[in-house]
Length: 83
Ligand code: SF4
Image (cartoon, rainbow, N blue to C red; front, top):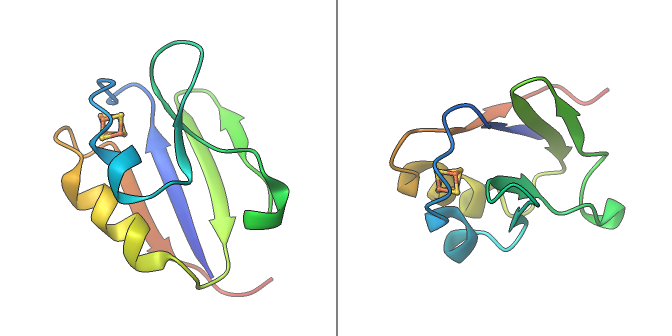
């Protein structure tokens, strides 16, 4: 499993992430979020200053490409243990 975190304070709404990984989406404020299709992740959480979700191991390379493409480094991808 891995966790994707978007730092919404750092996000600039450039949307390079959307073209690398279709799980990223634009929210009502013009910033990046993760789509809320629960078949694709454990649950998207919107917390103060960030959006967080955990995924099984599929599409991890896409998430890493989105993180690399993000100019302000607003996306992090980290491995986590199965719970
Ligand atoms: S690429 Fe980075 S700055 Fe641009 S919308 Fe995605 S998370 Fe935000």
